[in-house]
Image (cartoon, rainbow, N blue to C red):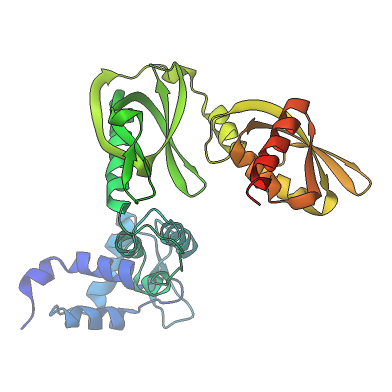
Length: 326
């Protein structure tokens, strides 16, 4: 027996069939659409299918007719191309801070933005070492609160912690709630950071979102946001290590030509490089920190600090302190 209520909604069913089951490589002709409707208990004739497609075209749906495949129809323009959906899936799948369960849920939702054929290609696995298994949900809620505070022009309150040797949370600042004015979120070194203005310290601060606890909106208007230049923030992130807030200096480094690309990859194309023989002199504006010294020492004897002298001496002291352990 035909589905009478389905007959009234037949046009919508035809639209869903075209959206979910067709693309340039998988068109459906009128007979195939009739078969799909029949599986749903809806009777249809070829003439009515052509009429439905005509109405959908008038509505604005981008339906094309394939000349190669029995006059089949397909949706030509969709919200996302398959390649775009793959990029989104890979970005989510490879994010360590997202738990495996949450990543799968998000990937399934993204797959729903394409058709059934796209979904098969999108359900692939990306191997992620050291994936966060327990804190993904908390980070999502923290991010949501941060964006809400920004939208409402409100300050934000939270407690900040680090892990100790017993794998327990060790709250900083004696566990007191930190209150700051959130400016934006920044993705850096596979972690989300909150960029905010601290009225107490009168400067810009960075906080790893996954280490923020008890995140709440504060009913106070934000302060100091006008002083935050997003382009400058991005430059600071590029030239810092682990978001360590040290003193910004122009550091001259001499390196072997074989590794000069390492500096370009890390600091971008705007750095000054002067080639001389087998060596290059690289000048970088960066925040001097132990993290930077650790990164530089990983290059071995192929790179060394030429100046300024105080930075060079600080690096020597850093290396001497390590050697004391051997």
